[in-house]
Length: 174
Length: 431
Image 1 (cartoon, each protein chain N blue to C red):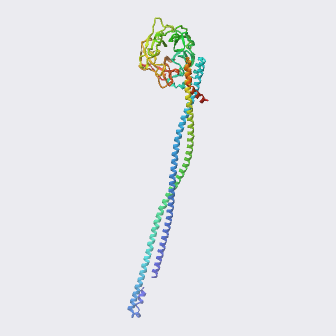
Image 2 (image 1 turned 90 degrees about the vertical axis):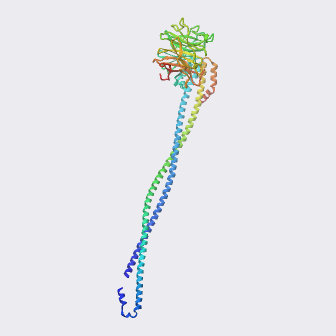
């Protein structure tokens, strides 16, 4: 820069000195302007780049933070999912076991109901036979008592009244 | 300038590289984040699906378990009912077996009676006494002989108890015996033949005692010429008979009072025998006493009947009969039956007496033994002492629901507590 300024001060050029001075000045100004503009442009570019990089870094940080949270959440959810799957598996197995048990219990219940029906029918039949036997016995005993004191008519009446239950008892008894 | 330019370019290049790198890293991280979020979303979806499936399956399982619980409850109920039904069937089976056995014995007895084989008939029913007793359901009331055995008189001779009763299956006067008061077997007919004046099939209410080494049986028979009920006496060398009555006339008839019935011999503390009995019918009945001679075969000379009791209580329904005088703890207690013998109103009362010949007054306005859940119309009682010196009361009763002739009046025995001011009939087994 100093060399440029010294060159501009040569005597041969003193005649056109004012114009040259103006041109030089303008030229210098232009160069300074270019220099300043370039510097400013580079600064702006650098600033923009740095700003953009900073923004990108911020995005990176946020993404990384979110990723860390997401991964943590993923671990938790995966653990919960695993637990839920285990639970589901257990419950499914229980459903299978319970289904089998219910089938067996239902079958057993049906069997018991059938047995109960048969037993109740048997009880009913036996109750009928008991009633018939009781009635028959009462009449035969009355006949015995009456005949024992020579009362043949009462004895005959007693036997006649219990003919039906005695007949039933005989049939039921085989 | 150049240096500055180079520096600027370098700075710019570095800045650009840095910026690009930042973008690349940010982009990669964002991409990774998206992938992670997508994975998380997938996991969450899977979790939601699994939770839903779990909830549905759990509901299904709970429903199943509820159904199992319900089914098991029903099963328990059905099995309980089944057990009850089986137990009922088993009891019925026992009852049917008992009924068959009892009915078989009674039928055999009926055939024997039809063939005039009273001893055979008595043996036939005696053999099925146990099964028949289980059917009458009187175990808690003291039932010991489940056949017609009216107006029982139970006495201990030696180590054996003898029970005598009104004519029925075994013959004119029935005898059964026991060594434990629980198991009774038929001995037969105590009075195989009747005196000439007595009408057949009308012999009732015996009372037996050992007097001067002879066993005497006082009983009621229908005096054929007049149709009056009279008292007579028969003798035997042993308590099982046969008792022989060679009388040409009855011992007592009281025809003007409507006849004499229900004799009961009482041996006083000094050994003097007395006879108590009842005269008349419903509305005019009275209970009498008269001293017997030393042999017990006739009334003591110079004695007359004295009235012990007449009906005066509402429950007696105008009738007192079946006397049995007891000396216990220095007190004379007259046990008697009241009301209609052929009904459930029949019952047993007690009176206090000043002595064997009275006078007597009712000890209570109510009977000491009357119809209950297991017996109807108890009466015809006699009081006796067992081998241990304890008092018992023997009586007949109908089975509830089978009251009135020709139903059976079964034999019952119950301990008798004479320690209190009023005798009380205890529960079986408490003696």
